[in-house]
Length: 358
Ligand code: SAH
Ligand code: SF4
Image 1: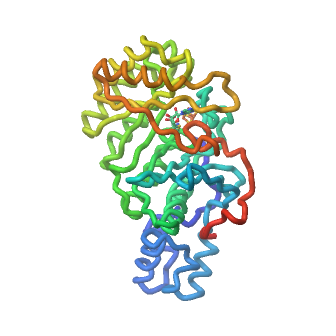
Image 2 (image 1 turned 90 degrees about the vertical axis):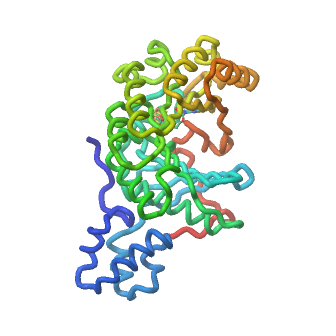
Image 3 (image 1 turned 30 degrees about the horizontal axis):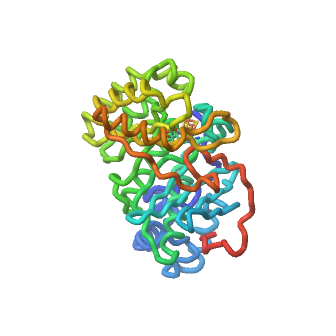
């Protein structure tokens, strides 16, 4: 298995590991520290309830994992994307999206991705490494802090594991982060969604976990011939087996699955595609999210034009399937689905700089 980060960062240690670090301190220090990190989302240097020497020791032993390189804002301030550098120089991105009824953070789970879907900017750039629990959790904490400090102050309620990387190819750390986000940061697992290209052993692992997270499957094609081409991992985990794994997930969890479908002009937007997709979605009672393909540098094909997107959705609905078109966020800052590639190293500009813990 690919390695993760080099040294532990602030959100890596479990409560037990932090207790070890606090050996020799009064017992209540652990509660103070845990509360400060996860409930107040403060860094050790800000925890004035702790003695100065301890704050310094913790700051040195547990540095933050993410160094901000660039921050881009779009949609009238409702979408913010960060480009971060990790301790070993790898780069990842995180997106915060405010909607009228909720604020969602889209987190990365790997630096790069090994799955090689040609239409995805992350896939085009290749794989670097898995992220550790602390690197995933810190993306949520940092974004939540910015949301809380904004005007008006907003509470992050939803997390989607839809940034760079394939979450179920890094399933242990992703599940570690899910536990931390659900249990310690206090977000409900029902508001967490893991998106997968269809890694079947990962879906089974998720089904065996007690927490009720949502599963989104990036389908994009509902016949093996086309899916082999669009999503190469389909050759290893073909559709019949993928549907069976979804069926099992549904049986165990009884939580609605969603199918993601990036609509690619002339590739997967025909009437036949709609019929195949509707049939698969109906039998699994899945919700379909249609995403008109976003532009990426390394893929020549365009997204389906708006009229055809509407017609495709209507076809699906007419066939008895449940389908919506996903609002496209952050397109002009390359923060939309499939556009994350950690390449636009525009420095953080002074007026945009926010109070970030450092
Ligand atoms: N690796 C996971 C999660 C990250 S990708 C997965 O593939 O599910 C998040 C979503 O964006 C996936 O549904 C993915 O298929 C989709 N996507 C990738 N490239 C895209 C593009 N160029 N336009 C629209 N959606 C895209
Ligand atoms: Fe990886 Fe998902 Fe992009 Fe495919 S779509 S290359 S699985 S991030």
